[in-house]
Image 1 (tube, rainbow, N blue to C red):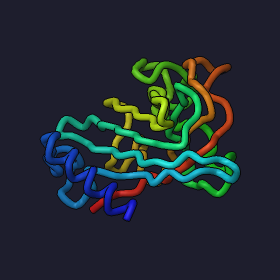
Image 2 (image 1 turned 135 degrees about the vertical axis):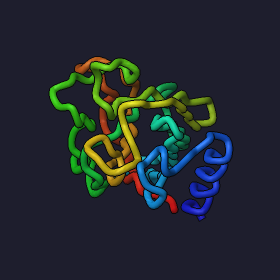
Image 3 (image 1 turned 90 degrees about the vertical axis):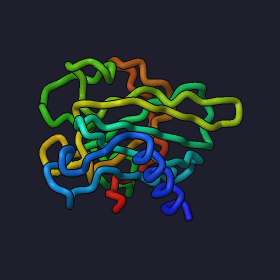
Image 4 (image 1 turned 180 degrees about the horizontal axis):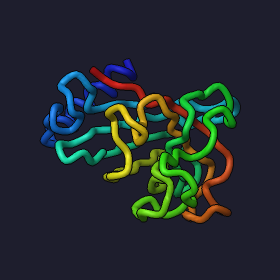
Amino acid sequence: MKRNLAALFGALLCALIPIDAAAANGSDKSPVYAVADIQPFPGQTATGTATFVQDRTGKVHVVVRAKGLTNPLHGIHIHTVGDCSSPTAPGDHFDPVGGRPHGYPQSKASHAGDMLNLRVGQNGVGTMAMEKGDITLSPGKNSVMGRAVIIHAGEDKFTPEAMGGDRIACGVITPVK
């Protein structure tokens, strides 16, 4: 059921964002949207869905909605490895260029996997929406397909010393066809 809702949400985003699969991905066979079903690590409660839609200009629109969150802000990032078997399995933040520091996600000098914080209401539900020009859904070194989305326990202050703390939930980005 969650997968069907995520696919429906992705389809709705596709209807709202003009998408030309051939222009965005170089082929009409490549996916133009993907989802990550985010599940908690043991002892945690956060769950959610991250939806990725690549528009005809190649920019990727990211929408994350999660529940079971306790702090007003939670860091969220794309990590290198699509493995949610343990909090350490996803590896470091996705950085296809290499050598870039963690930082504000809309800075050209930060990791491609850096994203804005989830803003959480009193009901424990958090949302985040942003556009990224440094990742793709199509094949290549900047592709996020098969990588992990991680929610952290606390706020990301966009410095290498304050990235959000413990990893509390994880989902692997998969294409929706």
